[in-house]
Length: 297
Ligand code: PMP
Figure 1 (cartoon, rainbow, N blue to C red):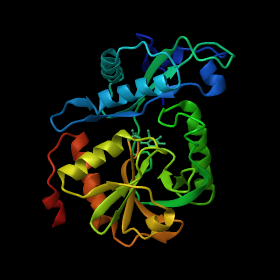
Figure 2 (figure 1 turned 90 degrees about the vertical axis):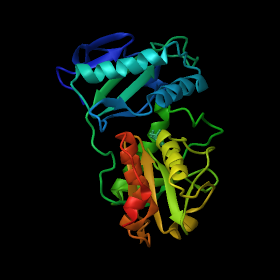
Figure 3 (figure 1 turned 180 degrees about the vertical axis):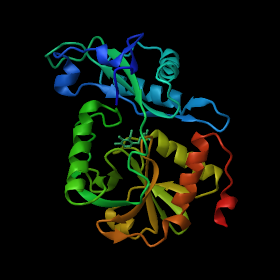
Figure 4 (figure 1 turned 120 degrees about the vertical axis):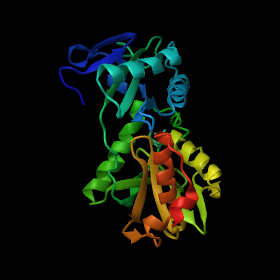
């Protein structure tokens, strides 16, 4: 992720990653009490580097902090400018950008009264790869919304994601699918889920998921491309009856699912609406125009 020349941004300064330290008595390190974002920058069709949905990501970072009482005294426009500067200082064009808000030394369970911000970046290919995914229903549920502010992209929540991913890998699958506390399909460890049935796209509503920024972009693309889209609760039984399915997230982008619990989806990915949306998403991040009709031939 970094080498001796890597530069990061910390509390208003640009510094060498290898020469920057943090306190071992921090509340974030001990209790997972921190908030982060995952953003991507792309080299767009006209050659310019653009941080995709930068405002949406920093607005979510702010809201994530507010939800768990981490003070947010940062200016989002300055932070977005810092992202561009980090890319420039590291000679990066396409990169994954990771802002992290973390708390100073404090061993109590009191909410923080101060916070630090770090922004680093590294080159990262498609997080879940390019191949269709073999997915398993996890034995882990997503965290109970009554036990946590699940719409806050908080560090501690990701232990649940690590457990689910690890279980899937150990059982020979590529990725996990987690249910919510009521037994409905929620999301992957780091991505939202969609499925296709009878010419229509479905995805779980907010409530028991992290409502992803990529999810919002996919919904926006469905509207633009006249693909009917509905948010509704569904079970794995219903999902297994679907024609096709995909995950989406900033790191994973749009990635097709081959099978759930060993049962393949009936439609070839290349003919699915997910494939159309995958191409439309790629075009959107690169600021290229996209015509759905051109994809049907
Ligand atoms: N759900 C979870 C649990 C995630 O970690 C992510 C990745 N941030 C997503 C969904 C997708 O969110 P986004 O599209 O904003 O990256």
